[in-house]
Image (cartoon, rainbow, N blue to C red):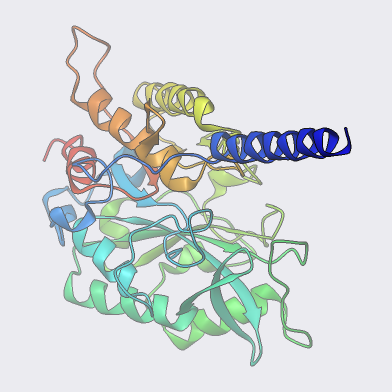
Length: 346
C-alpha cells in the first residue's frame, strides 16, 4: 500500500513537472521568422546619399524617412536587442546610415566624468555618445547632402531592470550642452537651444547637420525646449503626432500593433502636411520579444513584413501612401528601407 502511494506521488510529481514545462514552452515566443526583404537584411540596402535627390525647399515634414528604434541596442539577449549587430562603438549606426536610415533613437546613461554611455535599460551597448557623434560627424562630412534626425532619451530610472546614473555629475542638459559645444556645427543650432523650441525646417537648412527632434527624460518628460516645437506634448508613448504603443503583451497581440501602425500611416499620409509624424513599428513585452514583433512568430505576421506588403499594395486594395513620416523600425530589412525612401518619389 505504501509503495502504491509512493508511485502515485511520483507520477503526480512528473505530471506537474511536465505541465510546468509545457506552460513555459507556450509562454515563450517562438523564434522570429527568417530574414527577408523586410526584416534583418539591413545591408542589402545601399542609400548613402539619397537625400541629394530631394529639393532644398522640401520641408522635413513632407518626407518619408526610415529610422531605427533603440538604434544601438545590439547586446543583452532576445528581450533587449532591437537591431542587427554590425559592431560596437557605433559601427552599427554607421551601417544603418549607409543603408539609408535617417532617423535615430539614442538612449543614454549619465556616466562618471560627465559623459553619456549608450544603454538599453540596464544593458550597456558597448558605445558612448562620443562614438555616436563621431560616426554622425564623419558621415555628414562625407555626405553633406544628408541630414539625420535624432531623438535623444535619458534612459535611467534607477528602477529594477533599468540603469542608475553615476552620482555627483552635472545635470543631463548641462552634459548635453558640453557635447554640443565640443562639436560646433554638427547639430542644427536652432534645435539644440534649451530655452527656445524651433519650427520644423526645410531640408536645405539642415543638410550636413543633425536635427534634434526632442530630448526626453527617463519617464518621458522633455528637457527644456530642445528640439522641435510641434513635439511639446511628446512624452512617454503616443502623443498628437506620435504612435508609440510599445506594449505588445503577447505574440497574438502583434496583429493589434500592426493595425496601430497602419492607422497612423494612413493618418500621416493624409494628415497635416506641415507636421512631422512619427510611427514606431516596434514593441515588446515579457511574452513578445522585439524580434518577434518585428519579424513575426508562431505563424503571426510581424510588423516589418506587413509594412512592406502594405506599402507595395496598389489603389485597388487601399488608398496609396503618399507620405510615411518618420518610421521607427526594429531589425529593418533592406527592401523595407528602400520602399520607404521610394515614397518620396525618387
